[in-house]
Length: 250
Ligand code: PGA
Image 1 (cartoon, protein in one colour):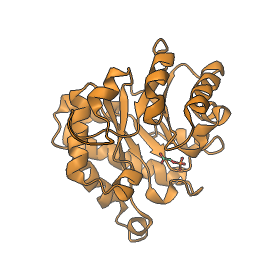
Image 2 (cartoon, helix red, strand yellow):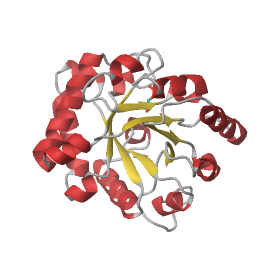
Image 3 (cartoon, rainbow, N blue to C red):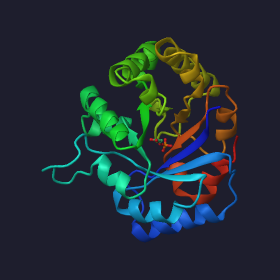
Image 4 (spheres, rainbow, N blue to C red):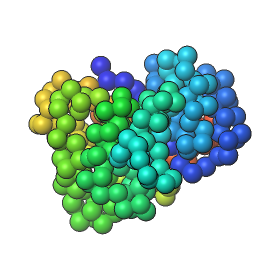
């Protein structure tokens, strides 16, 4: 049985005090215990956040990025090993903002996935097409390539540790959400691709999250889709009530 997951991606928001207060607020609200709530904070919060949540089995902390090396002269970077040492257990890799603003190539993403897994961090690996790709009916092929190029070198044992997030670029931060029909169509496609490469057991057990303007109003319909196992939530994760309402939308 795959896990239901709602992951909040704070991006570059909240100072230290605001971030820790937001975590307290979220934890103090009633959220479904069978849903894993992952909070992806900026690096400045991560150690304190991991410490706050360490005894909660339905909460976890993620980094939003890691470097592709374990250590070295990379000014300003943070390694998977360092992230793991804080108690955080997840890392977002391949977010479209990293791909486009920071020029992260497939080969860099592959290295990041490897180094995360090597340090016992679970990658939340993002895929998703641009509006042009969708309008030209290339969206399935684009996502197929993103999966194949960055992930299909993994052994079945390693692939089965991943969480996949489908985030159509045109829906991220735009207020335009994929329809449940579009989300289910792509999630089902991703699962069938995983099935082809890694078999039924692994494909059935891989959590595939939807991301892109997911909010407290549309989460219920999105999460009711057979192949949508939760959400990767940006803007709406910055308000405790909204984040918890989304987590309670299954
Ligand atoms: P959004 O961001 O919910 O603000 O659209 C989602 C994401 O980028 O993960």
